[in-house]
Length: 531
Image (cartoon, rainbow, N blue to C red; front, side):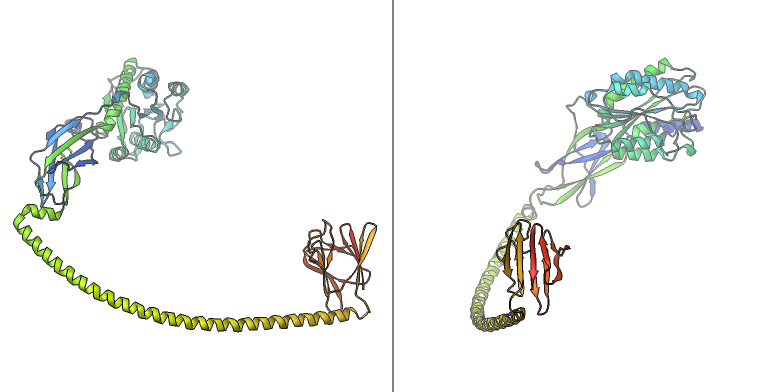
């Protein structure tokens, strides 16, 4: 009974529709209203007929559309030569009972490379068994997607299966491997149609070897647009497990190889079968990835051009998938009312026009009165504003005059105090009968200069009290100041600094007292200070 039930289940799943439809929104047209036209894409590669679809229109309520036109839109592309992206997943078990499967699969793929890979294709080979220590299932045979047959073949020829606990088993983690494969294809940056070719014995029914369900794999593959094709390595003497719905529900192809004992290094019959199946899958892949396009049109029961939004539904009968379409009727609501009741619409329109005229006249009269009142108010405000501005200008002029007088008074006071202080300091400087002397020595030449100012500046600039035309002297090099008691030398942040009796003073406001006979040096210039 159990076997009969399984056979029935397989039969039902095999003939169920696994449609995945979507609307081309930009294809919806109301140009021939009340005829509505639109297109859909169905991922199912098997052609459908009109009876496979049910159309409904939502007006006051959802109603079935009894009559609609239907056509299959043929594509001009030759799908068999279009480029594609393929991930070949080879179950590679090191268990002694599985040596034939491993040798046959690797040999078949190696010999068929040139017959299923075209220039511009992207192909990657991986092997899998159980989950390894790094929590991976998929392992690279060739490291990247490529169309180089020679490159792939070189990696295949060097391929050695590691002998460890993850490979030396009689089952593998198939759904987990497929889940990783879908993710790998999704992350690969390519707009090409993407597909998996799985070669395995399909013995993965034990939950302890699987952490991902068939449904999870199917959902992921459909979401990412990945077609899964399966080739089952079939053997005698073992209970046969299978995953027939996985390929069907992801729009791929499923093949079961002829049975064998599995005791050969390479089974030539199965090798040829695998080669033929891989080539067949490759040729059909693009078509099965793209599915079919269909055009629908129907006459809406709403024949009034009211400019409203309406909805329609498309249902795929044997899958119970329902998708909803939105479209907007042409025209507008006002025109629609005229269409429905012409006489009543005219009477209402005339009444509305009369009311509008009366309302407009009242608004114009009110607007004129308000405009005149606003104009008078603005004139009064302008006069007040001008008067206020005149008063403000007068006050500001008086304030400016007072401020200027105060500033000038403060300037004169400050200048007088400065002059008084300077005169007082000069008197003190002349207590000895004369001003201090600076003896400037340059080479064999010397000159003397009176320090005749309490703030006596020395530098290359002509604005100094003593100008020394020497490139090593800064524009305002140092200042000799008198505070009433002592003379002080202050370096003004010069480039080379100032030496006083051999001590360097450099930096802004760095100073030292000067005594009679002190020697001031700036590079090759020597100055002697005499009180």
